[in-house]
Length: 329
Ligand SMILES: Nc1ncnc2c1ncn2[C@@H]1O[C@H](COP(=O)(O)OP(=O)(O)OP(=O)(O)O)[C@@H](O)[C@H]1O
Ligand SMILES: [Mg+2]
Image 1 (spheres, rainbow, N blue to C red):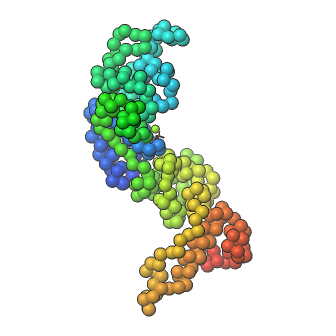
Image 2: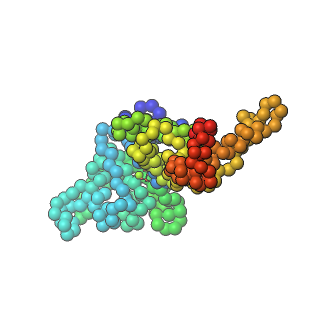
Image 3: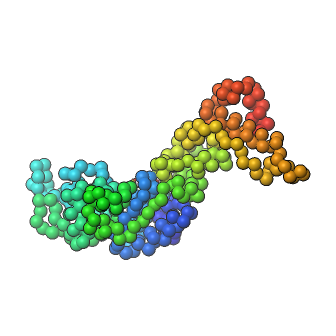
């Protein structure tokens, strides 16, 4: 597998930023060693995707990849979930049950949201990391497993260590190969590629034409902060595919949250606006550019409803339509 891409499209890590290219390199290198990997990044940055890539590109690929969300399972259940229990270990333990570590034997366990791991379980986990062995709850027999451990968190674990919420020895055991996924707003050059990828992925699924974004719409995409990172971008693309019938997406097709309600800035005067004969400013071109921006802004605010946009601009609807024609909007 080259470039860290997976067996199929669903596992492909898309991007051409320095950060993503670094991730291709590291995932390729760690795939065939046993070392523990710690994946750090905000929500939706692709931590699980990277974990799966490491597993499915490794010699363990035909063995299980077992994810556990340590933050979503209550403490009492999490211990049994991870390590299993013997029959009669506690009320309701009517049969022996193996835990996720045993299920992952030969393969990879993905400990998601490791920062949420309760302190009492951190000790038991530390031992698994050191010895690859543990006892089931209520059991005396030591269970040995051959498991690759990948952990992920969106928390600042070093801070959690300082504040006493996370064991320092466990942190060092996990932090053998750290992989950091920067937030999407810090790798905006990946946004057009990701858009194209998700358009292709979902247009097929909905049996509709792919969409294209106008340059202005794409600029809004790249300027937006994406607090939910790649997941939010994927959802935004999916929504456009479902809700919009047009094949070309313009700024006013985008949600207000993304476009903002700010009145557009005055345009930068670029070479096109400079009158080549006198070397000054082409006033008409510059005014036309600003007129265009204000009209688009009005249309965005009113979801493309021309009568409302015209009212907002204090012009007639017919005047607006004439202007849009002249400005080719
Ligand atoms: N670089 C990428 N290329 C293609 N798809 C991506 C990329 N990064 C993330 N995705 C997709 O975005 C979605 C979210 O990614 P993932 O679940 O791996 O994020 P996460 O970091 O685990 O998020 P959370 O912290 O919320 O669990 C998934 O559908 C994933 O396939
Ligand atoms: Mg995740």
